[in-house]
Image (tube, rainbow, N blue to C red; front, side, top):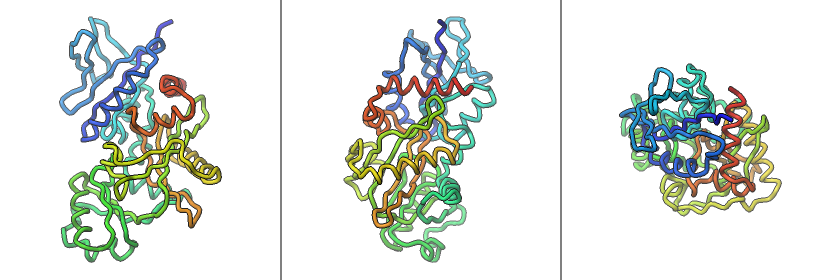
Length: 334
C-alpha cells in the first residue's frame, strides 16, 4: 500500500512562530509513521524549506507546493497545518492550498480569516444568538494617545475592560483595565504595537472554560472541558505559555454547566463552518447561568503542555489516534 504524503507546515511570519515550533515537536512525535509519509515544511519570511534526513535544505516550489528530493518530485496528498498566527491561522495559506486543490486539516480560508478577526467573530456570533461580551473596535489611524478620554468606548462600555489586538492569538499585547484612566490609553497603545485594530471588550465575571471540538467521520465531537485558573489577573501570554496558570482537565463542574458549554461549542462549530480541530474559549457567568464565547482558535496549540492534548488524553485517545483522525477527515473531504 502506498502511504499518503502529508506536508506538515510549521513556523510562520509572526511572533507566534515560537509557539508553532513547540507544537511541531509534539505533532512530529505522535504522527503514525506506518500510515503516513510526513514531510515537515518550515514556512518563514525568508523562504519555505524542507530539511531532508541527510540535512539538505530543499526549497519548496510554490507553483505547485512540491519539493524535489533525490531527483524525485514529491506532490502532497494533504497538508497538516501547525502554524499559529499568519499565514497559517488567518486564511492566507488556506486560500493558497484551495487554488492548488490540496486538502488541509484546518478551517477553510473564509472561516480562518473571519475567526482571526476578533471583532468580526463577535459580530457573527451575536447575530447567530451566541452570548458575547459588548465591545468597541478602534482603528490606529483614528487614534491619538488622548482620544480615548472622549471615545465611544468610555461612554458605552462598563469597566473593567479587556484590550486586545483584533487580529492574532496567544494573548500577545493584551491588557485588563479597571477604570477610564491613563492606564487605558497605555493599554490601547500597547495593543496597537501588535495590530492596526484594537478590540475593547467588557469584562464578564465567571469561570474560564475552554473546549476543543473536532470532526471525525462526519461527526462533530466535543472534547472534555478544561477550566483555566490564572495566577495572573487574567489569562495573558505568561499565564498561557509560561506556567502562570492552573489548567484542570476535565473541569470539575456540574454536568448541567458542562452540557451548556458543549452545546454552545458544537453550535459555534456549525455556525462558523469549522473544520479540523478548533478550541473555543468561554466565560461561564453563574448569576446568568450562561456561557459567553470569548474567541475561537482555529489552530490551537499542540505542545505537550497545551490544552487540546490534555483534553485528547482525558477523552481516552492517544495523540497518534487523534492526528490520524484529523488527516483521515481531511482526505475524506478532498
